[in-house]
Amino acid sequence: MFDSLAEKLQATLSDVRSRGTLTEDDVNAAMREIRLALLEADVNFKVVKRFTNAVKERALGSDVIGQLNPGQQVVKIVNDELAELMGGESAELRFSSSPPTVILMAGLQGSGKTTATAKLARLLREQNRSSVAVAACDVYRPAAVEQLITVGARAGADVYERGTDADPVEIAKWARERAEREGKDVLIVDTAGRLHVDENLMKELAEIKRVTNPTNVLLVVDAMTGQDAVNVAEQFAEVVQFDGVVMSKLDGDARGGAALSVKSVTGKPILFASTGEKLDQFERFHPDRMAQRILGMGDVMTLIEKAESQFDETQAKELERKIRKSEFGLDDFLDQLRQVRRLGPLQSLLGMMPGLGGHQLRNLRVDEREFDRIQAIILSMTAEERRNPDIIKGSRRIRIARGSGTNVQAVKALIRQFGQMQRLMKSMQSGKMPDIGALMRQAR
Ligand SMILES: Nc1nc2c(ncn2[C@@H]2O[C@H](COP(=O)(O)OP(=O)(O)OP(=O)(O)O)[C@@H](O)[C@H]2O)c(=O)[nH]1
Ligand SMILES: [Mg+2]
Image (tube, rainbow, N blue to C red):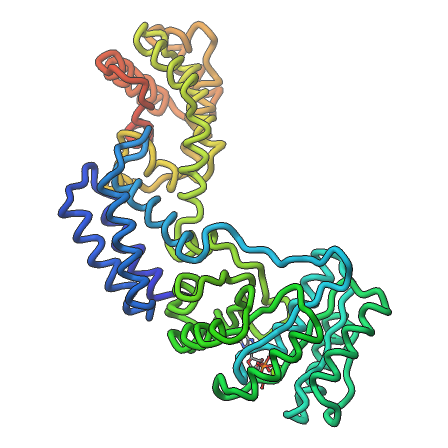
């Protein structure tokens, strides 16, 4: 899903990320690319304009924060704004304080209402341990009731149906009363679709809404229809109040325009995403995670956040003090390595290390085992050797190599690099992290 958009945004942003410094022209160029990518993804053009303006304003207005380089900040801004575009916070279903919670499903013909009804029933049964009934109020298509009986049963829900002869409003009223009587936690009402948003459909929906008094009205829209889905949602919003959107068939949507625009255009959040024909291909919609998925940087975003919280000020100050006083030894180095490692995969991590821009990163293939090797070498040293690596010569070197399962060259390289790093640190004012990338290249 969102394949082509993801690819384009990722390419643009990886270019931005790799720059040490960013000029206004760089930002403008990136915004042009992003605008094109979004338009090609069939995102509403007003939404695109608002989006790129917001990103640009923030990108140009922000200072360099902490250890992140400006390119990475632009990436973070795009990520934040993408999430914001899709609603920011994840929207939740409302639950009634006096059961049943009634969920009314609306939408055009073939949008995926019946499928979503069963999927939602399953999700609420599994995740909330709710007892769920579904009501078959589509009496126009003979097979519709049969379909709900089949998928409803598979989802473990009671199916309330009265065939195709009864009036849908009557069925809805009866189903609500029955759910109340039978003590169901949740009643999901499946309704009939139409080809277009027409008056009859709206009248019937309004009636069903009146007699069931739903806690949530969900509009199911087909993501594959792109901006049409958004237009339909807009038309619905004018006549029937709905609370949120179920975005169906996201699996077949390579562009993503509907998912990206619908909140912005209708003001209604996406609550659920349907991503396949199987019952369990249905999930709560989280704008932030979706943004990260589109940018292909779930890990990096998490890491940036982790880094922001991990490299706290106190630690940075202590590190700075040690460096200033030339007290930074191999023990501290190992501490740093371990701290870094807790954050996650090295390859993505190194890109956000100060002094390691993206262009360096691209040439750097990190083998996670390097970490183990460096750690093993340092751990094979005595405390004295770690404080004062200069004494590591001859037989000490052989002992350490043997103890760490490496060789004398590796030990030598590490100590030489550490020496260089110490000298570099002495000349540095701030408590930056050492250039671990260079160290690893040399230690190999
Ligand atoms: N790939 C994919 N197919 C889906 C998804 N959701 C529904 N479908 C398929 O889309 C078709 C229509 O789904 P329904 O749930 O019957 O749609 P509906 O809105 O109830 O249709 P009507 O009752 O005719 O108005 C079916 O073939 C479903 O299997 C989805 O998330 N992904
Ligand atoms: Mg249906």
